[in-house]
Amino acid sequence: MSSTTLPAPEGSPAPVSTDQSDLAELGYEQQLHRSLGKFASFAAGFSFVSILTTIFQLFALGFSFGGPAFFFTWPLVFLGQFMVALNFAELAARYPISGAIYQWSRRMGGEIVGWFAGWFMIIAQIVTASAAAIALQVVLPSIWSGFQIVGDDPALTSPSGATNAVILGSVLLVATTTINSIGVNWMSRINSIGVTCEIVGVIALVAVFFTHAQRGPQVVLDTGAAGAEPGYIWAWIVSGLMAAYVMVGFGSAGELAEETHNPRRVAPRTIRLALSASALGGGLMIVGALMAAPSLTDGNLATLGLPYVIDSILTSPWGTVLLIDVAIAVFICTLAIQTAASRLMFSMARDGRLPASQVLSKINSKTGTPIAPSVLIGLACIAVLVVNVGNAALFTTLTSVCIVLIYLAYMMVTVPLLFQRLKGWPHGGVQVDAEGKKLFTLGWLGIPVNVAAVLYGGLMVINLSWPRAEIFDPTGEYPVLLWAAPLTILAVTVVGIACFPHGKTHPRPASAHPQAPSSRQESTNA
Image (tube, rainbow, N blue to C red):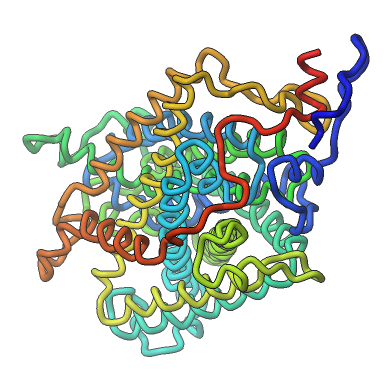
């Protein structure tokens, strides 16, 4: 469409198109309202990871298997995921489109690969949002007993606690669905305020831990009681699941690309920054908790996790204030996951790749948001929550398996991307952003970084899926749950095959190669 544009005279600045025409060159009309800035984009990724929510929930998992030395799995997982993030950042600079994982994988690997990457990601995000929402049960009754609406036992494994968790989680999901439906401006404002509160909370918590230290930072070298057992390395590898569960979702900035100003520059930066900031803050939280814990050997840290450390240090009202901040983090985490999932569902429906695509791809002209996907995802999340009633073990297993689906979806981007790199990708195309600045690129590091991302992803999928009773069947009541990961992947794949739009092709077939050259690429090559 811009192939008739004359090259810019030598020495003159490169002509720059608007974000809207930029999107048109990729084959789409601007429908979503574009209003997000840099911090809102960063907040989308940071709140999905939500270290205040996830480490609060999962610290005990890592410590119980690896002892204090489980800390070293944190930087290792970060390095692996950062390799993935670098690849995502380069793709985000070249394909700033909603439904990032789906759009990137279909352009690198074709329609089938792209569709299943999107399908896996949608299912995983629905379960992940449910897992985030259920965390309110861990927090709110501790703030005020009135939040325990059903019965008097707040434990998630008790009948009253499980039922109450569904009620609190459902109320939260109704709220996030409403916010997502009334417009991206409201969503971004609430999310940005929430992320600010979470960052302040993380800084405050780290400061409290370090000022109440019972031991020095060398505690991370202690393998604990687990280190005295034969085969400690395997227990340590299992402890890495905690970090693997936490550091996902950093690519959410790419999901909101069509609602972000200058996404070719902003999204790549915020993808890297969201992961890096989460890794730094989370690492300090882990070290601080290990230093401040009253005891490393009485079993409380392995069973209660961070709440045990916090309760031993802070008394009311400061402990309550911190719990309120954790509740805010849970809220924005759920909001961010649902937002990302709704944009992914919209992107696939816009391409006619889902059942009821015409309904799911409709944009409300007033709010500029896809309401139907938000409502559908909210209802699906509530349905998943109900699984926790009477069968907490199954719900825990589902939340563990959904992380495997996320890693598989990531690999459905990085593996075909590696093949495209070996063929010479990126093949020209747009080279500058809306401000005329050069796009983020890995250059000659592209192939080694991509190889590292693929190797890491493959090893982590194996680690996450390995049939361990401690992870998938801790009560020993359901031996079949040991194979939950492969069985769930098989089931999701079979349902996906049934839902796959056979015989339909997108009107603009995806390609890793550029379409007609834009004025920006011509001026770059002139």
